[in-house]
Structures are given as structure tokens and as C-alpha cells.
Image (cartoon, rainbow, N blue to C red; front, side, top):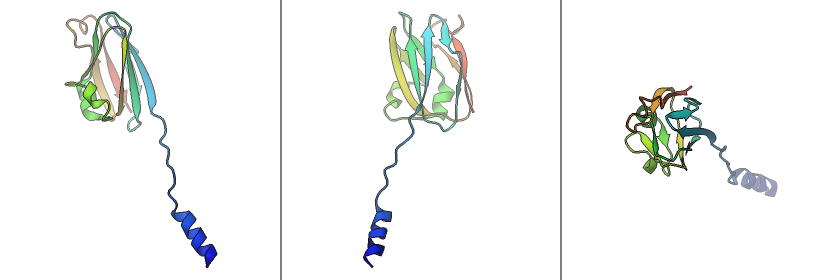
Length: 125
């Protein structure tokens, strides 16, 4: 009987579950450029977008449909305003999210930056 109780208590012990680390995608913003301009992510996989502005002036990472479809980590949600993230010059902003499948346009929303080529696409498969 003791063995059965011991075995039962071992089975009922809580098991520590460790979450897999989030995938990381680095995007560099510079004068009128996203690198890479075509960003490939996996649907349902927790991801950290590390947005690094290498220029002196500010840029934005504007992808309203992408952010509306994604599940933002609560710590990152305040960094996304109206579907865009502002990245000041010479700084990095990290956004944790879980993307949803789709193809989403991306651009810098600052005056004329998109017209000068600062645009791209996010593909989530």
C-alpha cells in the first residue's frame, strides 16, 4: 500500500514547464531603408522584433494590419500606437508578439520616407 501511495504522490507532483525562447528577428532602420525589407516570420511562434535605428533621425515601423492581427505581449503593447512603433535615432526598440499568418505591408510613416523607398513587407507563414 505504501508503494502505491508513493507512486501516486510522484505522479501528482507538479512538473516544471519551461517555455521555448522566442525567435528573434533583427530589422535595421536607416536613411530610407529597412534591412531586410522582406521580413519572414512563422505564424503562432512567439517572436521578438528587435528594431534598431542606425540613423540620427527618427523612423517608424508602421504595419497596422500586422500589429492588429498579431497577439502583442502585454509588455510591448504600449510601444505600438495606431499600428506603428517609433524608433528614435541611434536606439533599439524590442517588440514581443506572436504573429498571425498573412502578408502585410510595412513602411516608415515619417514624411516622404516611404516615398523615398523606406517600405517593405512582412510575410507570416
